[in-house]
Image (tube, rainbow, N blue to C red; front, side, top):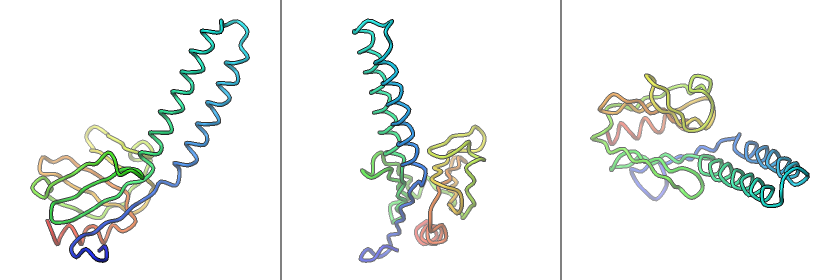
Length: 163
């Protein structure tokens, strides 16, 4: 439980892969831009368009990498809230009326197709920051949400207190 706020549980889990992904993406786009600037067959306008497209791609990759570099799970009287990235945006909230169960689970990235925000038909949705402990939230409509967290036992305990 978070100190100073009785009845509130919060845990932030950071992806160890995010800085590497952003760095690798930056290198790829830097090389792409360098190649595009040296292409003699293109007109200056075409070259500028290609460079701007590459820079835009880098910006999108960086924004996505930063946004989904961490997830904060907050469990309180209102329900379960997920806040993504350092800006805590976007947010996803599940009220207790939407949650039928919360259980400890083992998160394996390969079962979900890798790291990040994942959806698999027939399996549900997962927020995979890393492999290891996590929680599995079963919603009232039967859909499943799996989240990597460093303190799955604490999350389940807090959910039992409120849910």
